[in-house]
Image (cartoon, rainbow, N blue to C red; front, side, top):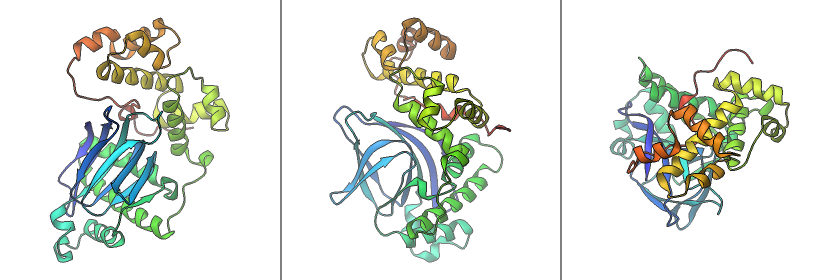
Length: 313
């Protein structure tokens, strides 16, 4: 069960398409997904275990990469008892008729050459830590942005970004990739870690000072970098996360609104209603009633709203 975001289809063969997907693990505790082609999965927000065969099990957390070179069934389960039942991935899919066909059918384009490199480098499923690829955050953010923009030349740019990512993935398996920069010198990674900390602590009150302390830096520096990179203050961004999480619970559960308010970290009901009206122009009860039967799942992190990188820091 899931919903696609930022999908872009009909890429140059042997690439197929790119899709960002939020998946909900049902109450039964697992979800199975069929895979018929060569696939690369990048975890955007995840805390799940992935089983592709009895002998192949991986933990999949933020910024991890899984390469699935063969058709298989993917079985996802929560990684820990307290792990969220939703997870978000970016999937790069190849055209199965071409990727598994004779190499001569792949063509001589740069995209095909990169795909050939990747196909010939992997015979079994493998996991790659995102920290082993220096430009991962930048490449993924650009792929997501271009996939959802529909601007002139977006497919060309997605092709180029995927080629660069494929090369980095292959090099990471051989130890040739440049590791990610330390947090203090990597602004995108800093934003990602702040985002991750907020997401994992949505159920309780948070301050900018506590987030900064967790990342071992000053409140002023974190606030300045976060605003420059996302266009939002920490307080505003955290409010969006809490409201989006409340939207999930309103649609997917029968919990009382008062309990949802507590679960999403609002200290009072008044603050919960005020935030809901600020972002959605309606009350939680009105939102639940107007969206009864809806299947769309709203991911808690409003990354689709993040603008291009702002100047200055």
